[in-house]
Image 1 (cartoon, rainbow, N blue to C red):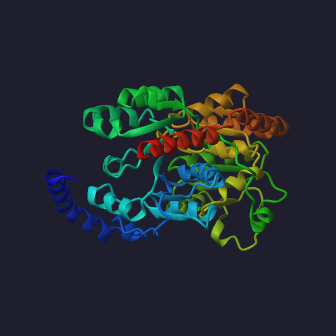
Image 2: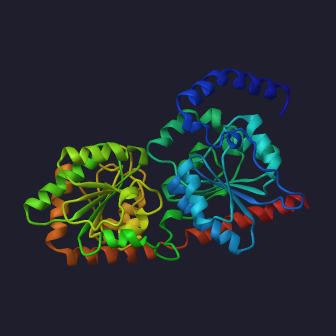
Image 3: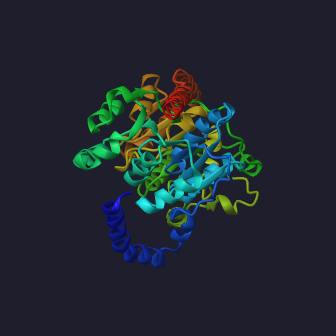
Amino acid sequence: MGPLGHSLAALMAIGLTPAVALALLVRPSLRFGLGERFGRIDVVPPGSEGAIWVHASSVGEAKAACRLVEALESAEQPVRTSTSTRPGREVFLRERPHGEVTLLPLDHPWLTEAALRRTRPSLSVMIETELWPSWIAACARQSVPVVVASGRLSDRSFPRYRKVKRALRGTIARIEAVGARTELDAERFVELGVQENRVRITGDLKLDPPAGQPALAIDLIRAVADTPVVIGGSTHKGEETALLDAMASAEKAGHGYVLVIAPRQVARSAEIVSLCRDRQRRVYRRSELEGRHLVPGEVLVLDTLGELAALYATASIAFVGGTLVPVGGHNLVEPVHAGCPVLFGPYLSNVRKIVEILEVGDAGRKVADAAGLAAATLEAFEDLEACRVRGEIGREALEAHRGSVEQTQRMIEEVLARRVERTD
């Protein structure tokens, strides 16, 4: 970094210091991993540099990244991982307790430079839409190629990137390769300035089926044994109310079940418990289940991480959140891999590809609003066998889209080979 760059970085640091100090004071949770966010990452021992650094923003991206990491490590490629959130970090620690995981440094030139100097990776892999200018520039200065895997530019993010296209030109030009999820994503990366010959369609890492269905804890198996289950996964404010209304409608028609609500933000659990009690529902937190056997009419609030994917296998039907409110949708893949048919609302910009796959085989159904959710839930319980068949159709449909991990791994290996050729 030249004198001008250092001066700008210093001004940026001075300008941001009061805001950072205030944020740390108001939100103590931000203090977690503060050293890592400031680039204080363990120094790599001499001779052990050269790991592939895989970064995933949060929980969903980390889960998808774990499949790629497993494939890379199976090919004897050393890997270290990072994430932007504490829940994302917990996913990596749970899935690969032997591996290194840190929080990504704040996107300031000094901090990114410090982290890269201490770790000396051979390649930086950014999952989905992690286009951090200072990080990418620091990688370029230290001859670390940057690859975007499972790349996506959503209907919400793409217009924002396009507005600052000129400012991002240097960042985009430094990207060595993009493995886009879909043809539309590929076109958008090219429009932002990635060279067309550096972009290919490798598919969505989240669509690749896992090696096996995750195991469910014994106490959860007992809790929902012998009772129908409906799951609301990754829900947002307003969607829990719709799920409770749907439950009441089904009960009036003679269909009872246990409702499991897994909020997108675990911190909202207390709010959801209060909502259920206001509706005169007996409700339990997962963390306080204490061996209870749930009965139809009761609600379980999942206030833990890492158990939702396994729970989907117990459900007759699931609703996936972020779709009845204008968020764009969350992980539709997990219930489908578990053989569970899914319902979702009209806001689907983040999950467009899998919705197309599911709607062809009727494994997933779109509802317009809360009333539509109630009607679709009632329809499911009036023919549970047809519901089960729809779930199997969905699982088989996803099998046809297996291969994203393999294609992404091949792209990474090609970039590494070119790096070696340039340094020889």
